[in-house]
Length: 580
Image (cartoon, rainbow, N blue to C red):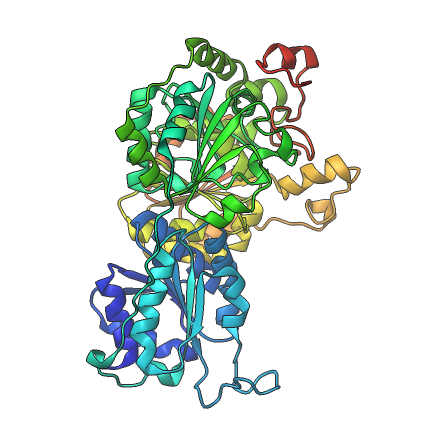
């Protein structure tokens, strides 16, 4: 059996049905082997970065790992943005890069390059992978594939990379002679659930915070079971959206630098936070870490012990566990919460007074982008997927969309590369072609990933591409307005930034095009036509500078985002005394 055939058969047995990539000389054997396998399909993505991010979307939707491949040199380096994104957001993807023949590879020679397009990609990606290896002996292929899969899928998930020279790919092997991989036995951490149960039952102002580590089906089921019994107030991080049906009455919203005002104010008043599957980074807590839950305790549950042990928050009980296991144990304990109903009444009053719809009316001058997100709430249905890019469009969506049962909110948190939305939507669609997918973009991110449109048209994927076009890199213009005297270099037409003709681009890629503005948001016949389309490009044009509200400034406590409330109003709506 040819080694490249063995690789494809291995992926088939693991349940992988799609491999994303861009063909090149050093990966041709692997692509040909995919073509010969009836159950695995190669998707030519027109850019390696698209392949790398599409594999993330496939992994997130399918529940298994994604696979992306590229040739040596520029093919491999073009994938690195997606590899880093998968690493920071804990997404299991196996990346395979072709490499020059072993007899051309420089190994330890003190030269820059020996073979054409030779690049030491393993050294480059080691800081952003869980495991990376050069497979330069054919006998090692089973061992390396099994090891890569183990690292990708076990513990805190993430990407791995195997770099395989061309002569190794074409080697004839006997599968029965290949050695396998046996992982080391890892002992489970000992957790004192009695202490945790007492902390929860004694809390008078408890809250739950869910992060990306809660998105597995088992974790979601256990969390929802706990909520059904206890009615505990709950919030989400940016990447924790979609864990629960957000119509749950005691859901407060998203916390963080761009979190909902009522959520940020509410969490500041908690005396106990159960933080599940979230690393509590400063985009959630604010830069004033010492002020986060200053008057309470945190039960911090994380699968990654390094995150627990290397955090600046000191008021934490550290629990090294995956969320599903932890919550399953809590559910067996039948913990009785003793908090007063006044706590829920207080939070619901905050929610009513400072929810995002009220924020928009009170503080946002250019409301058009928010109006569009409110419209999506009306036209989206259960189980739809929102794939959201980076920038103001991301925060308009995150602050305003209310996720219904089964809906998913897919975006990038740690790396946050513009051009993320369309590739990840493509991977999602290939994993589940029955899903209705909204790809939300700003004009900047849309232009970066424009080649992805070919795949939507080519495969008739169920993706509606939304471009919120304010003719600017809006997140940076907001920053420039605050700190650089309004000098808009590189972000608007006057500063050298130009948006292409999106209608013409739509035609070039064979997709329906719709142009709407704020006045069209009440045009029911037009909207019904748009949202009944399987796929299309929707350009929503808005004029003038745009902003995101609320927004936390650096070195401010989380409960005081800008625009600031009048001090007397703020104090009147806080249970804790912030001066103590």
